[in-house]
Amino acid sequence: MPVALPPSKLRSVVTQLELGTAYDDIVRRAGVSKRSIKRIKHNLVHYRSANCPKAEKQGRPRKMTVEMEEVCDIVDGLTLGAQTILERETFQICR
Image (cartoon, rainbow, N blue to C red; front, side, top):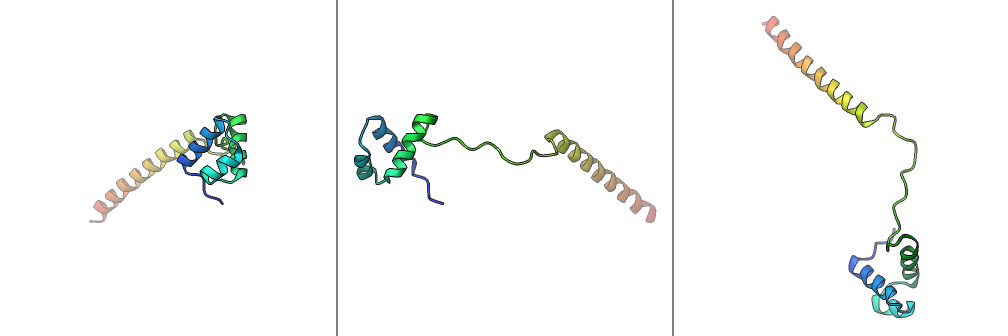
């Protein structure tokens, strides 16, 4: 996957596009491909940002909610506490 433009270079391209500089001049000054400049211009027009927004979350939703996970953590803690108490009692009885 190609590396993203450094923020300084991206700001430079955006500024030159806002000033109405020709693509060929921006290519020469910034050292960026013409295709990258067209992509940045497209993003500015459609999303009002030099970068397009992240895609929405895809795939099947999770079965366990945050609340369900919290309950599991509480139950695990109680189980661990009970095991510790039982181990202590067993140790004292066996002595």
